[in-house]
Image 1: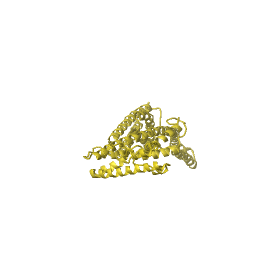
Image 2 (image 1 turned 45 degrees about the horizontal axis):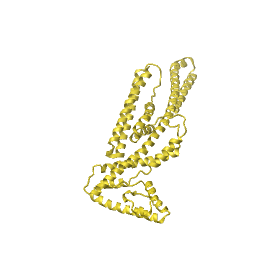
Image 3 (image 1 turned 90 degrees about the vertical axis):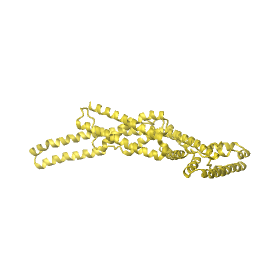
Image 4 (image 1 turned 90 degrees about the horizontal axis):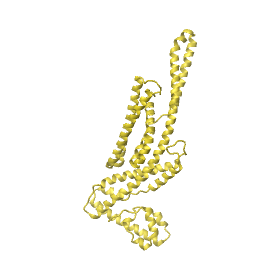
Length: 391
């Protein structure tokens, strides 16, 4: 029965323990597809090095023969998928997990909290690069697994190789999911910290804008109210000067209003949504749900600010009954928010389908569930917010 090759690190450990004569009889199907030649060349014992080189050569020869046999029985796409899976490895998973643990240790007390220690940006950037590479590997592996799902051939050894490749692919994807899932949970913690800080700045900005807006409203009313008085009581030159002074003050306040605004960009919102959705596809769902409960309320509030800024008519929080115009504006904000959410998830479905091909069904179902939950909670939160502001 065909077995899956050992990971390279495990293979090296075994080779260090075995005697040269034992190495020569080591099962060829347990030899990894790729072995760093520099490691072999660095071995100090010539007999051990020669035995390993012979074992590797035997493995390469056997693989070449198996590949020729498989090519005779499989169509080109299935053959290429089989070759790709045979050569697939979880290289980088250990590295990502190590960097994730370093980040968790160094940022202890900061993830999801205020005022904690700063994250190590160099390590974070490096971890994200590794995660992107592993994510690409994960997607290719799933797509290739799809080609082998329904393949059955009459030749026993070819079928045994296909069955082995399926098991190998399942093991590698599980290993990649563990590493990527753990890192995505860390990304959720970092996103919560980022969103909390951004939201505090935005809400402070909105408070300043409300004060400035009220000043502008008062000055406009004063200009309209006293325009006749200026003309009646003051000489024309002085009246013009007084009106110009008020208009200049209004112009300056409008400029202050624009400078005070802290924009919530669509790219930033999408990056937070990416963290929320992508982590759900790979991380432990129970852990993901606990962290999602922290993220979603922050996301809703920032989404409201984004939509208000986009429409250019931010509603001011006032303790008075909501007018008909304000009520219509409130509905517009929530509709705009829902359109943003729906457009985002439509794009995300396309990305996941390209990433995982036909194997994306289960992931897409999870994505749809998250979309529906976000919309449901957002509508509920929006209704409550409108009622509280009308009180």
